[in-house]
Length: 254
Length: 254
Image 1: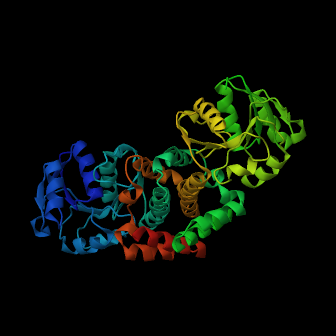
Image 2: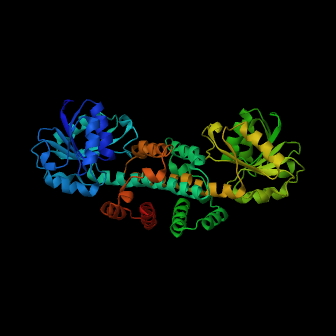
């Protein structure tokens, strides 16, 4: 697939934004950006020098790849409205099966970048693992080339494996981020700043680059320090947080 | 307090090791390393060119600072056995009150480095926040100077504040590390590697350097994507993990 071939982005959220920027930088022409919400599509379209559209009926039919990067539960609905011939259509979701696209085109697949995206934070796509899957050999091969033009870490991953990876990612990313959020709350309630913990958070993430996380666990739970755990439980006023503290501590010890 | 003054380390675990290395590099003379376990004290003592001792009765009485870096629930027991005059004695714990040391010396306090330590991983102490507390003005001042010789981030923190910080640290560090460990398990059970998630983990930790964690949360829970959450719950076979998934997801949405 030649660069300068046309790509259409369906969606204008975090993933669509970062992907659009990376593809554009790699020399692809993003011809259209679709979003239900006019303001979202026009902001991203402007950034990518693309046409902003808000009606799927206005999609050009001559693009090489159609990338659906909308909320997981909106993918099926978008898929139903796409009637392509053999143009490749992919979604970018970790948890939705490839088959949701089987009526949208003869060639379909998945292009799942394993990263947490924020619209305004620039991301180096080169290091992001991209999990691809195609419904046939030629689609897989094309998606391999396509993904390799923006990432040096492309893997062919089945829908079942992808679901496992997504589940693991929810723990490693969303849930660990929520642990930071809880720490932030606890500190704020006591007029202290999360800045105090930033070197600790950075080192915790850094450590596991070369160590198995279970092996480098520290703190009261892994030491079995009951007294500290009981005191900390008392300090937590919120019932849900108490429960969370107990269940995670127990699992660390197990 | 001049460098070259003598320091004694009581404890030979992760904290004692990293602190000993940093103090030694800053020009302090570590004269003795105590541990119940002969092999632990001798390994660290050798590294620091110190004497290895296994009986607290053999402690020299002429050191300037005695650093107790043992397990939290062993601190009181060590404190009872210390009968110093006005030499400064500190512990390094996040959760133990300063007062546990009040019968060990006229001058006592806390020297709590806010970091997760592993024996074999070199650490840049300069960036580690050190929370200090002294039982009187002169001890606080001395501990300030002492801490500043190895860290550029020294804070005077009361015992109550320190407990709050330690609780927050358990969430931000120990619990987030456990989320990595669970992800690692899920992937291993499916013959996949945590390497896939390492860029994601790094970015999740990186993001909160400049953003409030709650504001950059991503994933099914914050999107309220019920279908994905239900499917992921089904994939978790372990009862505790199911419970953990539910409670954390609920708290993310709240």
